[in-house]
Image 1 (tube, rainbow, N blue to C red):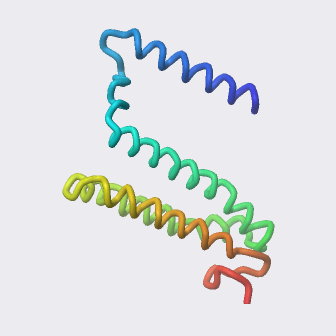
Image 2 (cartoon, one colour):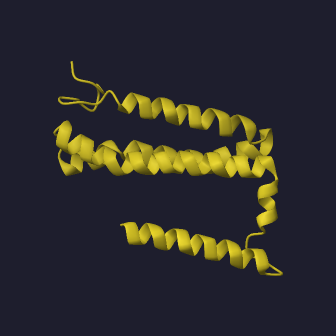
Length: 133
């Protein structure tokens, strides 16, 4: 795991150096001089990092702590997938229409509230009641 992490860092640095010296880079690094562009990318990176971590650990939590079967744990996560599939494109269109500030502010707040509510899961949790009675 450490070797993979180090390889990722080395490859990222190599990519950035390569993009800096190319006359026609794939991703012009000057884009990151825009505060709005850089902030939007940073927020997106953090939110998807948290979401990835949660979706990696949540099935384990549901199975080991709450006693869900593997199929039940996977089924419990289906609403997340459905909501993301249904709303992702619509939110992109909404951000184009009203600007990115509100979606990029409200979205992470809603995600943080959802992650905080997941902290209520414990032994004996059911699908309908997030915490034990």
